[in-house]
Image 1 (cartoon, rainbow, N blue to C red):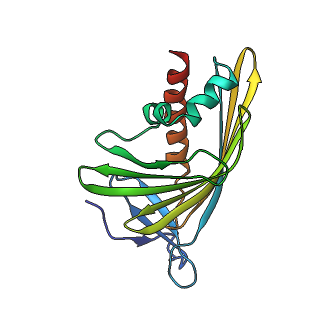
Image 2 (image 1 turned 90 degrees about the vertical axis):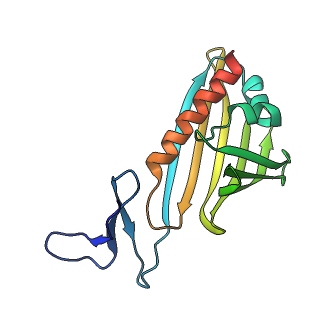
Length: 186
């Protein structure tokens, strides 16, 4: 059972921070602005992985809608519903993460720059309960290396609910790269 938010500090309450427990009982710090609303938290998450497949093969897995649906990570018990996949500069991709009939999150991706077999740059907006919870710019680079591909993924992200989700995003990227690697090497 989650407890009410409590001010943190050593004997002194800090007006800009509260500590709350989420459903996994670990504590998260929520930063509040002067108005008491959660502050925007900015971060950059970068992950790299060497994949034993050519940049062409790895890029194809990213650009083909059927392949992407196979390797795109979705939490157990949830379904990712693809509403549109328009893989071109300026193209929009819309997805919903659902459990049964209930939508938990909606994603809108806009492709800014696609350089075949070299780079994909796109933005992602994430909504929960109709509210924008985060937005990011993601840069995916396919670099030839040792008869394979060094895949460099950089996410410049802003979370709007006052707390960093860095560890969750790093874990998500690791799962994504594991599944992508399996898709192109088996």
